[in-house]
Amino acid sequence: MDITLVILQLLIPLALMVWQGASPSRSQIGWLLKTLLILGYLVAIALAGLWMVVPWWIPYLYLVIWLVLVIATFQPARRQPRFPQRSGWGWAKVGFCGAIAGLFWALALHIWTGHLLPPISPVSLEFPLRNGTYYIANGGSKEVLNAHLDLVRSKRFQELRGTMYALDIVKLNFVGTHASGLQPSDPTQYAIFGDPVYAPCPGVALQSVNMMPDMSPPALDEKNERGNFVLMQCEQNQVVVFMAHLKQGSVKVTAGDRVSVGQQLAEVGNSGNSGEPHLHINAQRPGSSPMAFDGDPLPMLFSNQYLARGSRVENRGEP
Image (cartoon, rainbow, N blue to C red; front, side, top):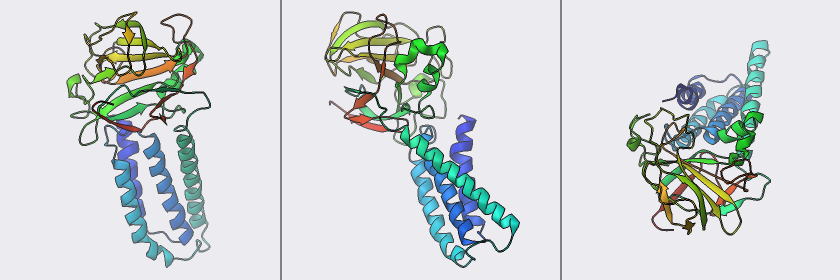
């Protein structure tokens, strides 16, 4: 497990809740600001965190524990004076809590705006997976939620600007995690590996690659970044859709093939520059050539919903 996830999504929340429950406030305003600080942090990590190694339901558990602690500490806090009693150190602690609480709430608001549709006309597509609960690991309109944005806003990577609103999709198992184990080296241990990938629109295949090997996580094939993929053009709106990191030998279409919506195109794999099995999908206007990714990027709507990191999609069986 990534040490950053352990610190930000496990250790800090637990430490903050111990602070809430075991460290009594010496003023009502101190209790209020501490309570708001902790809630602001929990909301921020719930919105921005990668909840697939640590299960997706853990933020809800944190909020329940926080609420129980708030109720338990409310009456003792009411018996304290409203403000610190002529103590410079007491006022300094209150001021520090207030500043950090404001910072966390400003961060939470910033992250929340990344879950909103950007001011660009989106394209409506069918969700390309339909065999369980899927989780958006990368997606949204802010860099904190979507690593593709951070990449393509660099001048060096302007030829990839069409991937700006791409999604990286994993699948969750029955306990709400992405794999059997923390980071197994066997790609078949990841819930999404081998899931069928379906055409998100009717159109024509422009290009496909089928025989790149599936990597053992966390190994990357940096020479063949896209791995196996299908590039297709939707017929009704001339939108180009790209789906990558597909399973070796699973791609069923080649350039020029007509494709109907819902037709199986391939299976999810772990080919290319992919740290673990997942499906990459992005939409754009046609680029400067059939395989170019420099066209205008397009946000995608699935069932009229704009998906960002943390979004979950339940798809089971035929649409």
